Image (tube, rainbow, N blue to C red; front, side, top):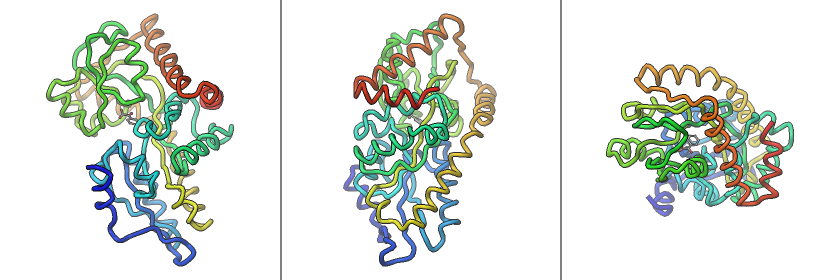
Length: 320
Ligand code: 173
């Protein structure tokens, strides 16, 4: 589906109504991840909370996931105001905010980032470069992994074709992999067809998507940290009453507090993967060192290539 079809699908008669002439504003919301799956869940709970606490002030009409707007189009859609609020990860909107790759290199929490001024900086970048308000970040404490259909013995991915997004690109490339970028919606079929030997994905969500059926190994240790963000079209945001903004900000803070639960969820997901027959390939010693050092060095080198000074500024407030 292209952007025009997305517009046609979304213009359902409900538009943003501002406080100037109506009491209740309605925001159209879309998730980059399939509805009801792991990385839509925090957004769905947020929508429910806003719709409870924002009665008469602000409501969110949750339109759906990639069937409403294709994954890699959602950044453009929220930037243009076709969507008012999006649940999206920086890896899916690198075209609009190239420096966004820094976000998944964070080692601290969103609470730390709000306290040390990083949140404001990142909000400003989102506002200036893509016309959206950076309302919330979810995914703290969730790391990414490489999943495979065949085993490896060392941190060397040469000869393997791996599904990627910008999250893993620099690291997997440095380790010699051949890369194919796909939206999450295409991973299952690519595995089934044997078009890929593995994929990057967080520790959570594999079973949810049914990918365990096609996955033999998870490589440990994990690296980086998930960022799944709530973005509000800036014109829609500016058109809201202070009260409506307050409802959204309070619900965002509530959502961010919930992220500490991810530590426990990670453990139960890893256990469920093992039960589903996914074996763990664990690098330790020098191999682990290579794996993690490559992740960090390649990741930050990619961000520095976008803007070296800004990369330094972000590294200072995103890492402990
Ligand atoms: O692998 C991906 O699609 C990806 O980049 C991502 C980012 C955040 C959460 C889940 C997946």
